[in-house]
Image 1: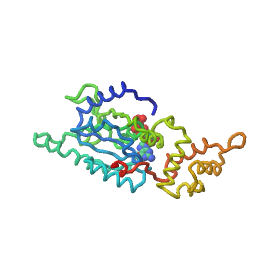
Image 2: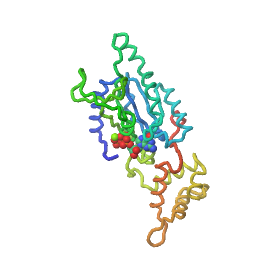
Image 3: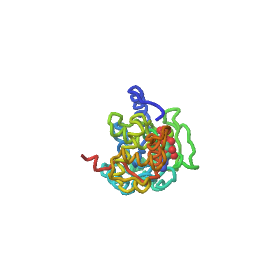
Image 4: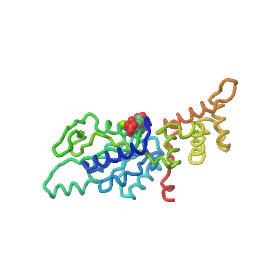
Length: 284
Ligand SMILES: Nc1nc2c(ncn2[C@@H]2O[C@H](COP(=O)(O)OP(=O)(O)OP(=O)(O)O)[C@@H](O)[C@H]2O)c(=O)[nH]1
Ligand SMILES: [Mg+2]
């Protein structure tokens, strides 16, 4: 995150979003498929009540496919529409259009009864920093994107992007804040690299990743770094340092460097597709 949120910022952002939400029919909320709950904003349900809701499980390519399915079911059970996507490659984007129509069926029906035909669905993309909002909008809008400019009846200055003939996007993606107070949320967001590594130092983060991988994805660390997974996490980190020749002055092992390698490889998907939180934990 390039900036800090303070209570004043949050109040202002919330008020701005409340204003913007008046102009739209549908909230498109991006979450990170590796941490689908921790990457949500705690106030969005409150802000978005009375709106059709679509959750996009973005970065699905980095998350465990078994849990992508489970998370889709989880959100569907809670009454959201859900599509799993990879904004980088474009995978899944084609499926969005039909789901948008379905999510906004009531509105479309209401329009029809009033004799309004083919008024596009108006949507806003929201999500916490780094979740992929810009990448998604660019990929989804593609070349077809044309700004329609100010429209009658819409507050002056608001720009609409016409994604296709049945969907328009309010051009300011809403940046929301995660649930900072929760230590686990901070930890998970730091693990995926969404917030500065300040919350925990890099070694602590690496140890956390090691713990998670050993318990949920046994074999991955052993295969990539030839470590003994039955050892303590700190000893595993030491083995990574040894095997990757992380040596510092004085011929001692450089844990910081080993941690950096592990975190970089983990975040870039080199250790495979890994999910960091599971639907079952949410019900506890
Ligand atoms: N692997 C993968 N990477 C993605 C995906 N979507 C976005 N990214 C990457 O995630 C990073 C952040 O993407 P952005 O689109 O800048 O995120 P944002 O939500 O607009 O971020 P802010 O503008 O800071 O709020 C970039 O490095 C993207 O390439 C995806 O589906 N898969
Ligand atoms: Mg952006």
